[in-house]
Image (tube, rainbow, N blue to C red; front, top):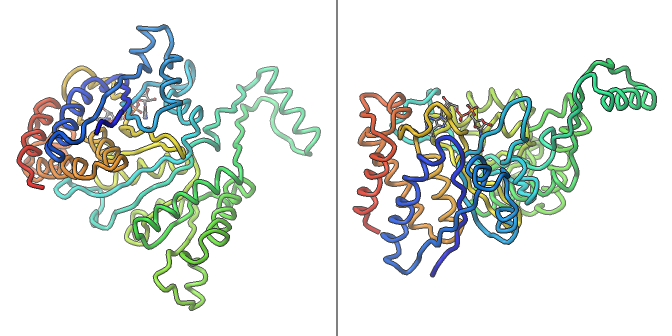
Length: 390
Ligand code: NAD
């Protein structure tokens, strides 16, 4: 059977990590299924490569193909800070309503972690991907339209915003928050996980972040009453009967909890900006961004992606770590039912870490490790996969 997978190379180190990733995936699928399953690769242009060839960063052909696609996988795309184009990754999330950003975070044995008990970190973050301050509704300071808006708010809502302010708007809907929490709870049920924690900053932003907490508990109560129980009910002595415990934490407290009591957290459902911070911080706790996979999903389309950026200083030097893209590829393979191939990639990566032959960024995180180039690392993975017995 052929599985069509769209791929976007990405900017910066995108080309370096793809040179390694595609052959590794092909070998893993071949080894696991002996020619019965095959990936049919279709490249889509985005970012600088697209701009050079078409004059657009996100060409119409790419958008049309993704509109009808089921799965895609992408490298990182560059975004200038402060001025210039808006993030292409964020644009794709919004255009295709990829409302859940899912990032599993676990420790790979052998990597020197930032925490004492990395083995206790095994969390999957569900980050809302389409709303919040990421909606990009911002007004520059001291511009005419900004001042109009400030005057309107001050006059009509009895506020006293300084007229020289820059303004950002944080839209959050009941629909958007509920569908994110719903998919997090469904994931916990499917994977037999013990808890879902709603992370928010509702003590300060009561009508946005606070509403996320309220709507999250409502979904659990209205749609998953048989499978879930709240932490409060557990404290009151109700028997959880192995039900999934729904808890909530204020975002700043959650950063402490993730360091001190990570074993108490499993699935995390959170808003867009909190999720951005939390997923990078958790990845760093157990060995860095170079190892963290991710996917952005709607109900129809899943775009898997390396979670790091374009690492411009490493681009073209064959030194980048391809593990984030490879582990995202393993998630993609599991998503399309090729679990054995995903398993082969993950096992080969762990074996390379056990043997202490890794790319230079990881070599710094492993005692007495030998650093190899990105392409050499890819060849090592292929050899390991060829020797895996299923
Ligand atoms: P970055 O992730 O590119 O780099 C942060 C640090 O990590 C750098 O030291 C870099 O060399 C290192 N690094 C990252 N990935 C690595 C890898 N695979 N192997 C080895 N080292 C790696 O983050 P940044 O510098 O903040 O951003 C650079 C660009 O990437 C920006 O334009 C930003 O907008 C973009 N970006 C894109 C995405 C995405 O497309 N999903 C995500 C984050 C950043």
